[in-house]
Length: 145
Image (cartoon, rainbow, N blue to C red; front, side):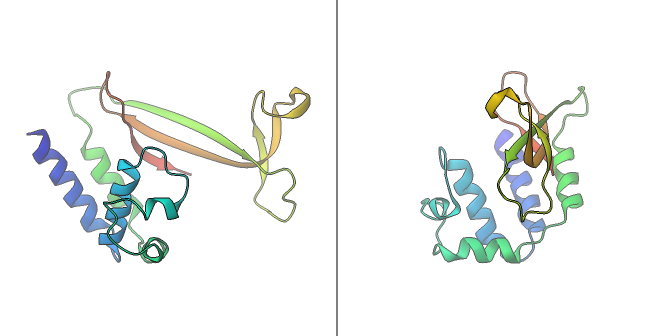
């Protein structure tokens, strides 16, 4: 039964990816199977990514899935009999010297800045994820911004 549920989930996500869905799906598998990839180029070397390295960038440019339809598929994976466990994370990427980047904001980063100042200038990234199992080791990202 778990194999069938996983196959149905993958099939639904695959059909929502739009153009270049084969390459994007293989890239996703490469990200899952690679222990700690440091770049897209490294992911293109994964055995599950059967295309040439430049297909990675082309696939990401061509793929425009509907965020809302994907969110529906993700939410359908949650059990209806239980209270969902949702977790949030906010990470800061400090870029104090990048004066030409207009979108920079003030970000809280305790202990990472000289003179123990907890505020820095950079970009903030937030993620909301669903934790499906109490003892599991994976999370289903629902929203990233």
